[in-house]
Length: 469
Ligand code: CMX
Image: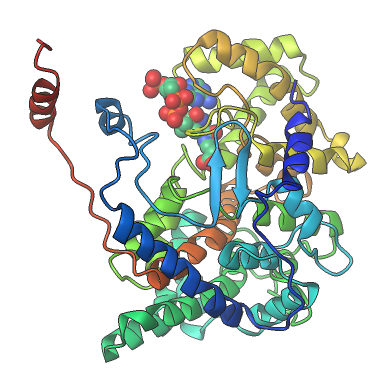
């Protein structure tokens, strides 16, 4: 069923000219490297504007307007491109390419947030030295201001962890370099450097913020360790969550957070960050808004929904469910008018390569393969596409990344599934802060699409197609 052919194809293609990234032996910081790559991109945009502003690249159909703008090519997003059949590429690199090229943590094997961020921001594969330097910088900037700690500690434990994360991120704007500089009246060409500084501070502080929420809600009274300056971002996050002794869990979180970091610009969280950032709201505010888009069950909350759905199935049918029983349970879900969480996608039309990468991780760990939760993920993925195809509604009957992501966390002991989207929120910052920096570097304008009423749409249809009744 979910063959590895996608991986093989991707690896072959990686050798071809599509791979845009280059490895440089350099000790330049991320900001210095960015400074070097920005002028060429600015030039490229200037040329596009000057020479092709009026070129027509597609039609707008009524279905785009009433169908959630699906398929409408309407925003710039440089760091990744999502192909409906083969999935995501980050500056031309597929997931297997990244697994091969990007520096892991010392002693680890999986991609880490720092090397992924460097790739997203610059289009270049960082050296090990650059990756380590960035880890150090993030660890040094990772402590939370005291007032944010107090704010988080004062929130009711019953408030959803995602609501708490959004509040914490928004509050960090107290120290926004961008906002302060804007108030002083900086030049437009300088926006990006302040936005970048905010973005890096935001990312650096996310683990402490997210871990504090976890501790407050689920492990009150336990001591939150200080940031270890020798560890990478996710190594620190896992440690602060209380799972630092589990190397497999740490590696899983590294992979999950790096892979989930960017999925081009049209998804609800990325788009929200871009939209709010386009008002020149600072990156903290823009990312806080994005987190609330992520908190919806059709988007980031799906990973908690998958686990809830699986557990309800296990409760009803017992531990060792057969393929036939899963099929029946899937039909029961569909007939009750609910979606099958972890399946389908707004753009993808094949199994999500992020799901395949996480499955590959599971298959390389005997303890995961023995887990009844992970076995159920696998069994479900073997029957759900057939059922969803027969059901005939979803355009993509295959699993997406959320079909497995929360289940692995559950196996490793992070069983509080209302928290899962917070981990996704730590991850999605990678792509969103990249865009928030680049949008300022390229001087992208306030986003302001035109809306139309149904009456106006009917008039437009009549004037374009006069024979329509
Ligand atoms: N189970 C049942 N029905 C589904 C379905 C699923 N997993 N996925 C899509 N459908 C239905 C839709 O609800 C829609 O029905 P209506 O015509 O009655 O409204 C129909 O199939 C067509 O939908 P689509 O064009 O295939 O999918 P959309 O682009 O509208 O929605 C998504 C995409 C992800 C919201 C949808 O597939 C879904 O709800 N999946 C389950 C939730 C989930 O896993 N979300 C995580 C997405 C991953 C991510 O955010 O990155």
